[in-house]
Image (cartoon, rainbow, N blue to C red; front, side, top):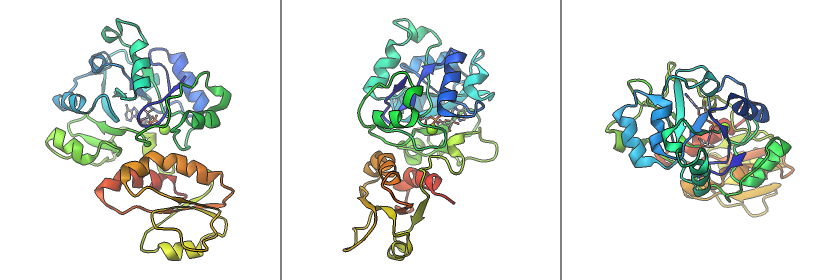
Length: 305
Ligand code: TXA
Ligand code: MG
């Protein structure tokens, strides 16, 4: 079933059941060698899924769970390749959305905390497409391929969780998100490293993930009026600058000026622009400052070349 989290909607299946997890991959059209995040209802369940959990992980769990942080840890023995894409690591998180937490805490019953229980869940969209932030987005994407969609309203964070790899000696930030590198640094005592060639594979970090159907172009604020001038007459626009008088864009969305608000609305905005009848989506890039890193990361992946 699909269920809401504070980040985006997930497509969940019993993480201990390989056939159930295989159905996630077929519904999404996702390659089977991609690892999935296992969602837990209780931080205490980490011990059933991961081994050699470092002290840093314990600190981060205390500080940020339940919440939008995924930790990549060494997998415990018996954790199947079907969850990890054959890697020796497992991605884990306890989400904070009340519906997700209620679902996860019911699942497995009263004894759940003492057993290997969890829901494997990637974002509930077709592979390579924009993550859903409402129940309607899930239905639009997956239709009959999902039996049940739990409607928990609009996701508050709006972009996928921060992913931090703690399976090796150095903490590596695999995907930026609402929990910032600065917050991680404050909790860890030193800043997380950027991914390198040795980092575990994460398809969310491939170029050209999260893409709308129409080509998306990014323009800086400095070159904005020129970009607008040169754009297709059938453009649809997501802008931080005000709409010029007599602008003839097919659709114009005034993006929120604050990074968290911008992120919350981003995927719904891109979906609306995508189906507006435009032949091109033009986005005014937010500034290259730390508070915009996660949003800029997603826009960079949504752009076409
Ligand atoms: O916010 C989120 O993280 C959402 C909600 C539903 O929790 N989930 C999500 O899942 O974005 P997905 O599958 O679309 O992206 C998960 C990312 C992928 O890039 C995957 O490769 C990475 O997590 N990942 C999962 N397990 C991993 C592992 N063991 N090592 C490295 N990366 C891993
Ligand atoms: Mg995804």
